Length: 208
Image (cartoon, rainbow, N blue to C red):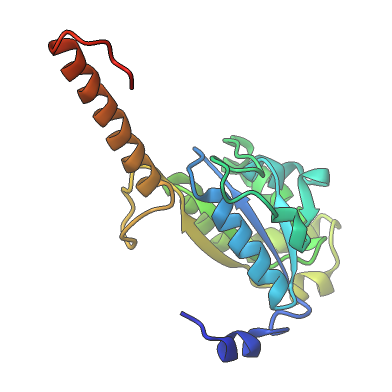
């Protein structure tokens, strides 16, 4: 846990950098809290933070799907289920052309830091994207879509993966985002079902 002195040292360490956060695949409770935490910490350290709406589909489509975030962009969302920035499965991102479009949309905004909150497929896709990054930029240069200087300036893509899955089936983490809430919901429903059974067995009307 960071103390106030450590936090103060982090201030403005991200100045001049740009980052983006997206949620992908099946949504899970806790994703909004993760989006809020990433966004506000990014802003705190002085980085430009972008919210990518509709997951990888928004990254491929670009335009208004990629929006600059402010401190209040993520106000009053942590108590909400799912993800307020949307999540969509994206067939286009599984293709080279789709990832090329995604790379272009990031580079033209100067984004070289990407936080992906999702499950196994989402994080696998992010890793493929990272491994192809330099080749994608070179292809954009060859096609005349970006300048050589831009490709050199943004030559490295940093990826951070946050495991969002109610299944809790991903190695390297004790509890995935959404698993705890899912387990509590199962216990609630199981408890209610058991009470209804007892009421029915005893010949009383259930009031749960």
